[in-house]
Length: 525
Picture: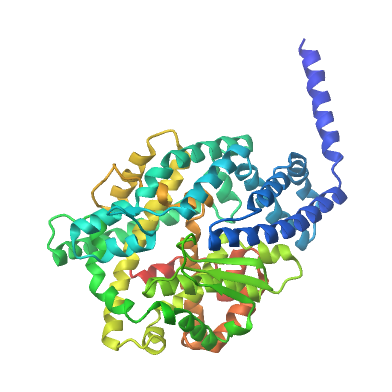
């Protein structure tokens, strides 16, 4: 009996070996070429349809092209060839192509699974057109966001915050299902959960990532607790709530916001970039800034066919926040127009951390004292007051980010528990504020639905920005208003697209590996 089993095992191994040897280098290269061309065409068509969805509130053919994309990326034979094919590749270009395409194919096995894609897309469409109720009337998320941060009536702040987060209660059940379904699919691909799968394809090491979160947590705790103490004292509250923190900075934020009415924001962005050496009016960037019913409430850049056709849409509101968001999205668009690569793959498949880092580098002008003084023409006393307040608000933002990142990590680690309780546990641990378990704000964070395991890219973007600014100011003395900066960004960063690993491009620009100490120094923790 043992002899028969041994023979069966040997035969099975031989058959498997024969199957593997049937994969040739030509097959692998053909599969890479095919995928690359399909993605180039589908990326273009889907981007056009998404533009319609976000600017008009509807799309004629998004579902059709998305189905084609899903069929392409869910091809099991294609994945099998890629799984076995890397060992045949020996040149740098094909290895880089392989890594990008395999990452898309592997994560796509999760996101294109039919039950997952249908559920995700339905939740996303609901979010795009959602208009919350406040005092019996439909309003916008932007209006409520501003109201809960600035209104002098504490009850109205609470009510507006509750309305602002109400969408979470609408989406929570669906998002809980997404966590479980994604994990189930990831396990069929050999991963413990979807978090591990997604992070593995983002050029990010999970243990190093978790150590980074622990480091930032430990370094920022005392400073953050001190900020909360000051807020209590300033507002004369025994206890403060989540809707009280931003209100403590309302006076300086109102002063600053008064210098950024809607009608000057695009001109500020164009003028700022012109001083860095970029003439936006001569670049193929189209703007849709018209405020209208049915249009998405946020701002997005759409690389339709970069570097030839890139678009930016936004519903702008008065204030610096809106200006910074616009600057960030124009940063994405600018990056897309400056890429100089023969392969569309290197233009369309930017690593998320790197893409957000490039956008943040452009938006970082809004934090520069010189920019506030000279570009926005804000009095020096107001600028100094704002810079001090912003340092504190940056710490609050960091703690909020850590809470959201750890929630997502834990949710994928075990999605079968009470996720609302998990969120408020994380909230207490990182924010040191009261729980409100009748609310589900975590489910209103759209990235969890449409871009799983994505939020950490904003943290990496801040590290990339801080490290790059340190180098720029060391080389060129100042950032804002320096057209040498544009040359630095284009030559060292923008033009490569995704041709190289983003860690390598950061080292090319700064002569140093990724180093969070520059962000830590910038935060003052």
